[in-house]
Image (cartoon, rainbow, N blue to C red; front, side, top):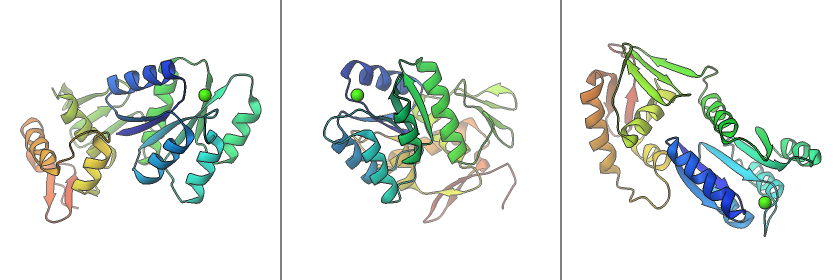
Length: 223
Ligand code: CA
């Protein structure tokens, strides 16, 4: 899952990027409203963390312009604790949730997980597909109750496929959602990771749909 962080406070920005990277997300960051707007307009993100008070363009305007341009990714705004009017303006501008500063990183991470799940159509914290179970809270995947040992790249890929199980996901979509903008985006690497995943879970669960991409589905389920 790919996250954009738009925050001008360098310390907080660094903390956010570190915490999100540690939690397994691919993270891009911007330190002013214009750069943030541009990234959110041109890159596909699974969720955005957007500070309201930003140089060059404030967070509410950034959000309004994204929504006007039909950019519908989940957005969580960061507001100052005493500025209730920012929360109202942010929700009216199309924010999906807000967190007031100062906040506990765990709370923000939980809200991010909830947004990512809900936008993929899952209300619960655990996502199942046949014998596979993803616990989004602990970022662990089990197969028939046994933990599957995955590298961080393998985890990101399988977690993304599980969020979107039953649907064909193209290689481009995977590259765009699994890597930050500085990563060398060679779609052949996806094929390599798919090959590795097929050695760790029942291989028939990941189908290659010729010319379109991959689909994760329950074993034997050809739908
Ligand atoms: Ca700020």
